[in-house]
Length: 289
Image (cartoon, rainbow, N blue to C red):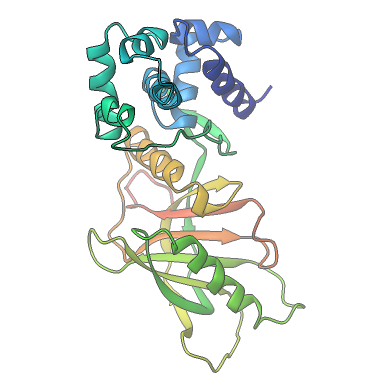
């Protein structure tokens, strides 16, 4: 059983035992693993500690119980392992920003969320901890032709916008053209949710339409990560992975306009495994590539 399967099964095990005492040791024992290794693996794969995750899932389970008319908040608190109603209410307000009583009276509505998907990616042990597998490497200077546009990550339609523009470029490309393609994310301004995006290929294409450009991406020193799945669906996981990587590997982000580069092996296979290049500072100890 690989690490992805272990964590996937652990999430199901936790969901099935929310009403019972759960600890790192009890969950690790269910999979015949050292509690120390399991805790590091779980934190790396899920992005939070096991105790934080269990608390969030118990609060998630409480949402359905609150809707049952004859169930009191005290009963729900004891049912899900909270010591008192007061501790349950405090935790609920921290997670959802409202008291559980507002759901009870119908003044607010919050929908439960399913068990999160475990993103498929390799991991490695570094400095005694587990992080998403990475390689320090250069993204070579590359001329890329494609379609440029902007997205606002604060609006829910940004996923559809990126996919729509990707399809616009693909509709202009000869099907005989194969090879890599890149999605380049650049920050428009500091602390802004608006990003410039370029979806393109390293080929000479001339499309006489608005927003089609050819740009030269400079050589950038990066940490390269490998993922399977849609970047738009793993954004929070990538953010957690990258922060954990920076902390454990003692690397620093580079000062560059480019935030991320997503690289696919084939422009016609955008649902395949891909690489994420995250610019970082090149330290004296990093060997030249």
